[in-house]
Amino acid sequence: MRIADYHLTYCTNIHPGESWEATFTNLKEHLPLIKQQVSGKGSFGIGLRISDEASRELMEPGKLDELKSWLKTNDCYVFTLNGFPFGGFHRQVVKDEVHHPDWTTEARLAYTIRLADILSAIMPEQLDAGISTSPLSYKHWHKEPEALEQVKADSCKHLLQVVEHLHSIKKETGQELHLDIEPEPDGVLENAEGLIRFFEEWLLPQGIDWFQSRHGMSEADARELVLNHLQVCYDVCHFAVAYEDHAGVLNAFREAGIKIGKFQLSAALKIPIPEEMAERKTVERALLPFVESTYLHQVIGVARDGSQKAYPDLPDALLNLVETKEIEWRIHFHVPVFLSGYGTLQSTQEDILTVLKLNEEGRYSSQLEVETYTWEVLPEDIHLSLDQSIIRELDWVKKQIK
Image (cartoon, rainbow, N blue to C red):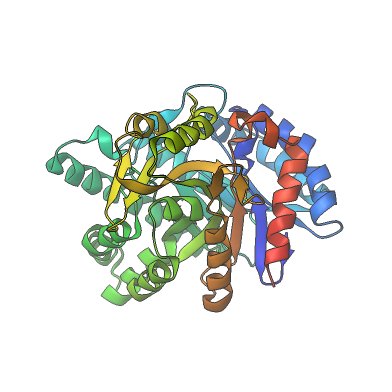
């Protein structure tokens, strides 16, 4: 929906279903009610998650026309796709498989190009649109420095093929599409520093050479093309877990010429670690309900001297709770954005408020997407119905936007 100068939506990865039939059924079931409650007679934007399976089915004859007709009838529009999870994302063990297949593979390339073609067919006129995607791969799959470098080389080649495809779409239609790389804890690209380095050491040098040699572009035009079509999905939860300074990160991106395709408004869990062992048992009891087998919940702890320690998953961190020297943990767990705390536990809601303020001042992106997908695994005492949960999140964000 349009709020002030922004387009606000939520990510439909909250709805289970991998086939296009299941995805479309969810849209028909949930979107009319949510739209009525939060945007009324105004158009409602959709942050659409389409799996690889659904993307193949959606390209079958008549399916895109059916979707376009439904969007028009229901006064909805799609301005962003979630292309990070390739396959199953609900009611099964996901963990590090959320990165599979990664950007070293032809499968990830073909899937993303298919998403670009779908988005081109359904996106509204006079509005840019983006596809969020994975941070290349999962770093723990690649133990040696040489292996990580090879991941970057192979991923860069595939990403530039997407850029070339998006460039061809722009030449044919005038549409502005961008692929938005989403840094995540334990991704090959997991923070701002790593992402900027990947742009400066891989994407821009290789991209400039690519478009100079293949398309006869000048260095300046080739650089601009890469930076227009490859942007950042700024997931606030992920940057908060890494204890990133949002103002510093956004300034660093702008200085490097890197654009923000969209902000994903999401909150992490955080909790202070007490010195007393008895109080640490209270922390453990508070965190145990959040130990679940579906998703990775990476933890980063910070010590009093500012040093950090990363744990691949919450159970790994809990094994170190008795002896840890950290004074706070932040946990990759997309908790509802409208709550600042859960009893003993807190959230990084304040980071969302900070980012919204910085975006208001700096105009980094007009696209805002709430992404909470862990309702099913949250403790029962903070459950609401799914539709009402989504509505409450969007209403909370609306109140923060001036």
